[in-house]
Length: 205
Image (tube, rainbow, N blue to C red; front, side):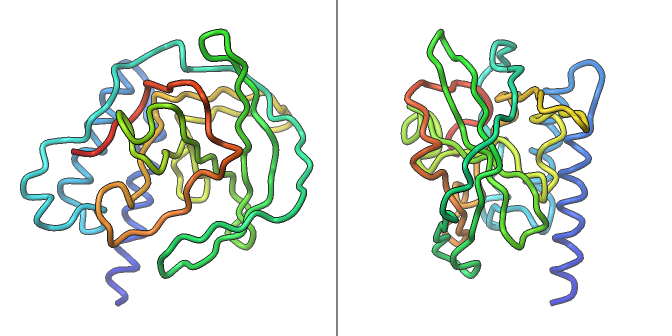
């Protein structure tokens, strides 16, 4: 229905506004804003029943150590990567746009950044870590998806430079973490971290 399309556009705009917050206490205000959208917006991934008893999303404490400066290194695009969502979107096709290398607890890590084919050319970073399935959603989380405006605070970049800053305090659950009616592309094996990432959103209760 047309109203659903307008509501979805409004949801994405409001989410994008949260990723443009600045100034003091940004993370707390960001999380507070997400809670309000989940509680009240018609495009909330929560069911109407879940919204009635919703008391807020669960997060790890803020951790300045997971705001990391790194560089988007070239990646061999290789074969196109196809991920089955299990829903109406069917198979979503990606290209590898590059790799981000960084260290966590003195352990080297690498994550692939994907570009979605036929989806606006945006950058997308899904990942899993050793907390997935216990402290965090078993299917993994997203760090950013530029097409859906979930990137401004999680991915700092400058035109003409491969150097970026990523912030895992803004890692968030895909919609399928909240209700089975949603289907989401999840992190491929190459984006499974062997270390714990205790930052960002926790498993939904």
